[in-house]
Image (cartoon, rainbow, N blue to C red; front, top):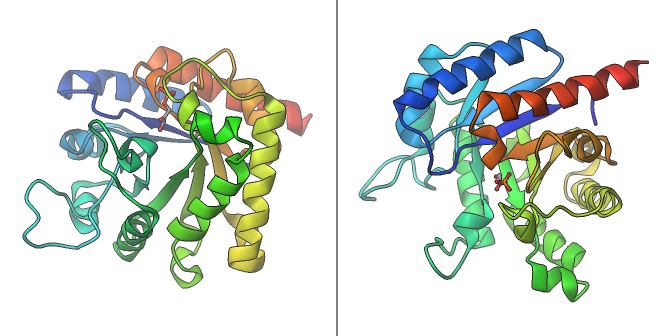
Length: 259
Ligand code: 13P
C-alpha cells in the first residue's frame, strides 16, 4: 500500500438526498484521518449536492459517455460530470461490462474511450478489471485481466497522475466471498507488471485498488496485501458506520507501517 491509501465508495444505483447525511458523516471520519484519501461515487443525481455539501472527501461518478456532448438520450458526459462538481469517475465496472441481463455490454474499446474522455475533461479515472468465476476456475484469471488492461487503459500521454486501476473479481462483488490475501497479492503483482509493460516506469505510479465484498472485518488484511493501494467498496460504503470502519482500517495499517 503506498503512503496515502485511497478508499473509494461506489454507491451504485443507491441513494437519494436523504443519504447526504451519511456522506457528511463519512466526511467527518475522513477529516480525522487525513493520511487516508477518501472518495464517494454516488449516482449522477447526487453528485452536485454531495460536492456542495460534503467536506474532506472527493466526489466522483460511476461512468461517463465517450462523447463530450450530442444526441445521446439519457447519457451524461465527462465535462458535465466535472461541471456538477465531480473530480473523478469510475469506468468499466463489471456491472457495465456485463453482456446479459441488465448489463450494458461495454467492451474494452468502449471502456478505453470513456477513460480518455474522462481524462480529457480533467477528471481522474478508475478503470475496473476482473475475471468471472468460470475464468478463475479455468486458471485464466491473470490472462483475462491482462487482456482487459491491454484493451481498456488510456494512452500514456493522457494519464499524468490521474489513473487508478481497480481489480474487482466479478464473483466477489456483492457476494461476501473474497479471494485469499495471497491471490489478491498475486493478481495485484501481475497487474503491476502489466502496467510497467504498458507504461514503462510511469506504470509504477498507478494506484491499484482491490474491490469485491470489502468490509470492516476484512479490509485490514486486504489492504495489507502486495501492491494494494486502496479499496473500491460497494455495499459497505452505504453507511458512514461501515465505510468509516474501512477508512479506520486503512489508518491503522498506515500507523502500523510507520511503526
Ligand atoms: P461490493 O463491495 O458490494 O462487493 O461491491 C464492490 C464493487 O463492485 C465496487 O465497485
